[in-house]
Image (cartoon, rainbow, N blue to C red):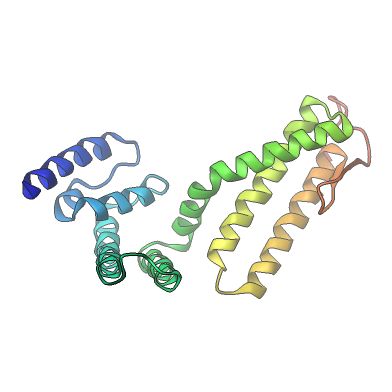
Length: 207
């Protein structure tokens, strides 16, 4: 019964994954168990990887799955310590297989929705404060979307290097707020309090 379930699950996964734009390798799907396949897919849906990289990644994730199962068998729960070990294993798996550019793309993929929601929140808050125009709102959204997205990437990427992380975060924010000011005349401080330094008009040349 268990073997039939696994076969059916693999068939469903194969049909679903191969129909997706960022598809998983058919060979990888056949070689590994459904849990490992699903974990690999959660990566390749954000960053396309060739078959060799998918299989290499699956081999490492398979070790994560085994450790996860052992933790549950021994303790029935995943402790904070073991959760941190699993997070470290995943980070190491990504670093061993993906390029730095691919890792950044993956981090952007998993952070996109949250960054978008946060940028919308800032845009709406600024609209209440200053009565910003539609175009000014677009500028605010674009700048804060980039700030929040790239900040999320930096937090994940430099989690083990707090000093470097803080420097990168500061640069991301400083650079993008400067762009926002040059394009729209708006300045937003660290408390998200906005002020209009100069008034943007539709025919205002971009600075």
